[in-house]
Image (cartoon, rainbow, N blue to C red):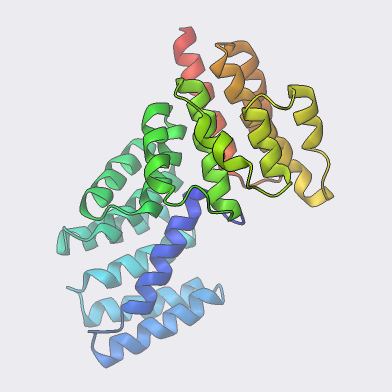
Length: 285
C-alpha cells in the first residue's frame, strides 16, 4: 500500500469533491475551484487556498466549498483550520456524509481518535460504504476495540476472494483479529489457497500456524532493501497479535514495541501496535 488506511480515505474524499463541485456553482466560483485543484496538485497550497477563499466569498452558503478548502488545509497539515471548515460544512448541510468523514479524518490526523470515531460513526450512519468501514476498522484497532474492528473488516471486505493486494491485506488484518477473538479462522484457510506465492501468503500461512515464528520473522528480510523496514514492521505486528491470542502479553509487548520502533515506514500496523500497547498497559494496572 502506498498510503496507509488512515490517509487513503481523505484522498478519495478530496478527489471526488473536487471533480463534482463545479456542477451547480456560479461560473466564477467553478473556475476558482479548478484553479485551486491545479495549484494543490502542484503543492502550491498558498495559491490553492487563496482561490478557495475567493470561491467561499462568492458562495458562502455552499457546503461543498468548505469541505474542499478543509481538505486542502488538512493536506497541508493545518488540521485545526480543516476541522473548522468541515464543521462549517456540517452546519450548512447536516446530512452530508463526506463532511463528517473528512472531519473525522482530520481529527484522526490531529490525534483525537475519540472525536474521529464519533464523526466516522455519523458518516457511516448517513452513508454506509466499504471504504468507510475499512477506515473505521483501522481506527477501532488503534483504540483497542478488536471486536468492533473485526466486524467492520467483515463489512469492508466485499469480495474476500479478490486477489488485489489491498483486499488480501484486509483479510490478513481480519484473520489476526479472529485469532485473538477466537472465531473460526477457516475463512482465511479457504481463500489463501488461491493466493499467489508471495509474502502476503506467507503472513497468512503464519497466522494459520503453517510457518514457525522464527521462519516468519526471517522471511520479512528477504526482499529488496527499500521494502525491508515495512516488512519488519508488519511482521512484528502480526507476531505480536499471535502472542496476544496466546495470552502472552509480555511477548506481545515486545513485538508491538519493535513494530512501533521501525523507522522510515508509513504503515498502519504501527498505529495498531501503539493502540495494542495502550490496551496492554491498561490491563496491567
